[in-house]
Image (cartoon, rainbow, N blue to C red; front, side):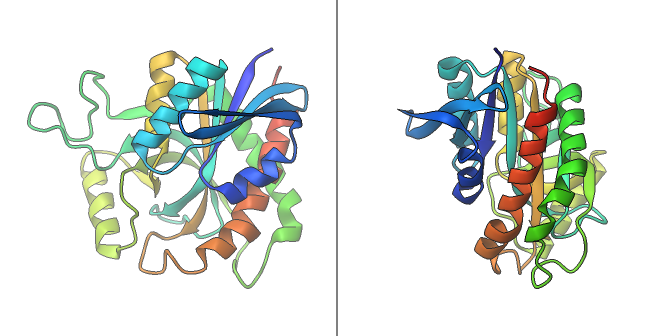
Amino acid sequence: MTTLAIVSALLDEQKGLLDQLQQPTQHVRAGRTFWCGQWAGHEVVLVLSKVGKVAAASTTATLIEAFGAERVLFTGVAGGIGDGVKVGDVVVADAFIQHDLDPSPFFPRYEIPLYDRATMACDETLSALLFEAVKSGLPKAGDHFHRDILLEAPGVHRGLIASGDQFVCDPADVNTIRADLQAAGHQALAVEMEGAAVAQVCFDYGIPFAAMRTISDRADADAHMDFSAFVQQVASPYALAIVSQFMRILPK
């Protein structure tokens, strides 16, 4: 049976997912706690990635080498930087890029040295299933839709997500990141801190990878405001509803 790894960025998200595991067993390795069990007839391992690209890469390699992960799903939050991407929306990644990678003059800016590419694509089949799960799962999270946090119904997007080892919360930084990426031909919808590293490790191992991010802020000066409440009341219920639907439609 194929093993699916579900990587969460935050503990509040993992708790809801962990409750779905049948006969969970706990394993501690490389400073992380891995939970193995079954969900909807699938073998599943859950883990928190910790924060940043190095931590995410280490977590992913451990999932593959030590736990036999054959598919990887990442769920977390991100800052919206694309036009029309608002707080409460969900972005399903088509690909990832490292917005803080600059190996010039030896390689073009953003290009991963010795990979001959700047972006790492997500698996088309797995991402299509995830996109379908988002569209059908979000309405099931309606009971958790709080008007005091979200002013509009959530939208769903697919596209490029940018990763970097910095918490982006300055409008000037957002403008610079956007402008520089656009100048190189890249239109990012969101910015976060782990996805590109997970995508690269999965590429190295030939492991299908898909990722979704709930937009918690617009990566501006208000990015830290009520973050915990947003995760608990919006992002966590989103993740549970979407991943539950994903598990139902995922082929065994």
